[in-house]
Image 1: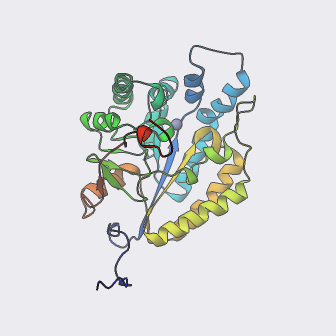
Image 2: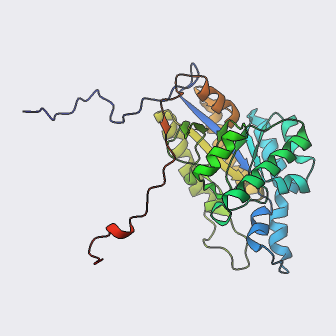
Image 3: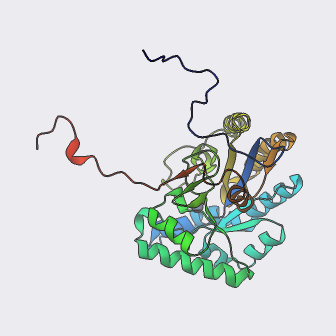
Length: 306
Ligand SMILES: [Zn+2]
């Protein structure tokens, strides 16, 4: 007879624990998606209604919000990763060089903040190549990372990112520490620690949810950070220039960063540094998965007659 009693010492997951640099038990990635008005322009398409109000809400980002975030990170001496749609960089040609000068990482985030389900493979490739070219032209250096607008991906996109010599993607959530998908390093994100789902509010009847209380969100984010630290994971915070650059969001982030700064055994690093750690440590190959989109269930549904 087989003994089904579980061994209490055996790990339940078939994956090992993630190995962080010596002396660190977890990592923190502070990421900023500098969307400004690019998602709005993409969603409006050929339409340009008379809605100065919505544009100005978003213009606050590159004018003020972004720089408040940069100042906040500097106060803690934290380096962050900024993902900038090429169109935003085009409108603000000093932005990328200034972010680099402050010691931060800059990464690709589409050309016009294209939504993946609305573009063909060829259109994606064209946008990726054009945005890479613009970054190199404006800064003289080649970025190493990509983050997909709205965090959707396809196997084609993963292949194109690799083909163009980028070293990582940061758009998926299949683990809560770095992993590899189709051979590309993935620096995972998570909706629960993204400011947009709680605070994105443009007025004019376009909003799906009311704004949430910052105090409640801070408590949730603190719990996520504390517990992920215990689990040895990667806490990837994602904020936006025009949302989290507002005064009360800066106050919220200040409290959160204070907690993080108090933990000596967490590693605050850019996504590029975390990707490099993944590729040059014992973690490489231990968390490798294939980008598989299962076939539709269609004909196998129960209770339907063919
Ligand atoms: Zn975005």
